Length: 266
Image (spheres, rainbow, N blue to C red):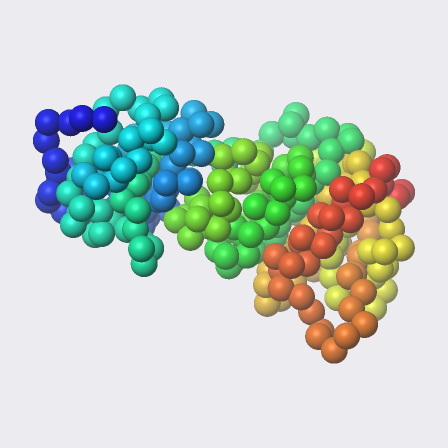
């Protein structure tokens, strides 16, 4: 991993580009890359063939040479001080990368009649988004469809996914009405997760193949437009005193129910 020159200046064009990609969603979209920090995430990006360029501090280049060799022959070596400048974590490891974008534009051809899908509508908290994607990857959800959500490729979301962002199919979905029509064409039944009195307990349903569960905004839940395009409303029974669950927790419970079931109820 040797390199003749060690970059030390914050004004170096490569460093300024990395920072701008970290901070500016529009620039990420223009460049078609996103920023990743940390040995584990970067190693997963390398393993999945997603790494476009690699930046490591002098210390990290020596310490992690074995883990970072795969797929990269000439990393950019930066000073340890510059690594602290780039880092968004309290205890930086000195390993950074720019990775090819993984979030795809929606294509109805990717939907399978027997698929299990999670639709996120207007979800805004990066921590919730990252945890949901990590859980979806763990449970084997076929894809997550994001409609008017926070930027899935922001550094906070990427860190929270713990590498799921490199494996899980994630799509930027069209508005609810259009998306619901695509789902219906494939015979996929939509379920709105709501706190409505007329919603059916998820325990009374058999979620499974051929279903899409819709999760809404952390504070306001699913919008009326999103609820209205779903064939069924469901609720997680809560016999305790809490009125609602965190969006990521609710999504995790519902994805578990999706993976338990066989054919979805009609």
